[in-house]
Image (cartoon, rainbow, N blue to C red; front, side, top):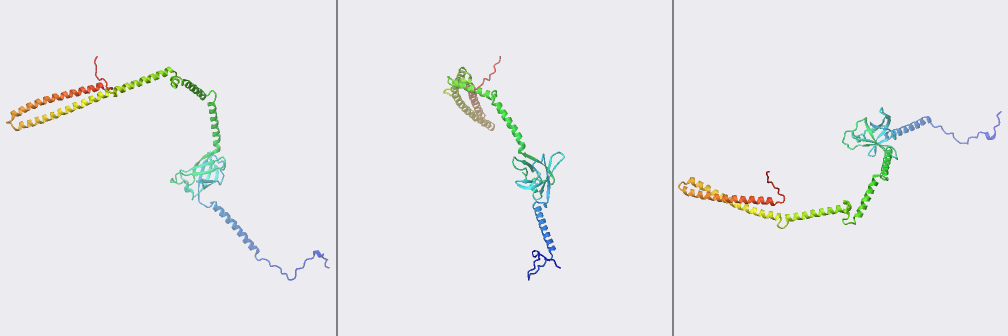
Length: 342
């Protein structure tokens, strides 16, 4: 017998005319294709990220040596003119206890680094540590691979203690300078005393000069010395350049000397004429024997004329010598060159 089934638990009967759906063909194969496509998509994304990060680029290694690596992390960029041209790949400690920063530099950017390049590591009060490269002369040879360079530090935090110490020393010096027993206060007191003395002396006969020289007597001596010097200069000026002074006498003497020189020149011209005549006479004596007596007479006359001219020249020279002696005597700066024997 068939057991009775409650109406609520009875299996609903399929509607009349409904068809059963057909199963999807090759479901497992399509699922495998979808998983393979997803895996390829993930691998392509990872490869693109690695390519964008420069993993597949050819690089050269640069080692930077620093006293410490505080603030430096792996993956930090090294910049040149604000552009990243390298990345810190590894940080290690060398045998001397210094930090070695291994930096990978792409080959396409390695030409910015030269043998004269300078590398700095800057730490500011705010912000992260920065590694920078500077190449002043781009025509120098390129930096070779695996080069080791020392990093110059620019640590602001390290400068603060030195700045505080210098400020403290400055404040201590200012305190010593402004103290009651300091040299500055003593100098200011002396200056105040001198100023008061000058102010009190300004009402006297000689004014501030008396205060500067220490009294009116000293000021009077200085003023009298200046008056005597002025009088001496005025007298010397009058004797030299005044009427009938030394300069006038000198000019008159020079005029007389010029006149005597003109006379001497005229006498010398006469001598030249007589000598020429005597020479002509000598030629005539040699050429014509019949006129020997007349030539002898002319020679005697020429000899007489030469004696007179010689006397005139000697007189002119004596006058010139006397004028020169007179100039030396009247000239105010002439010196007595005569030697006197004991």
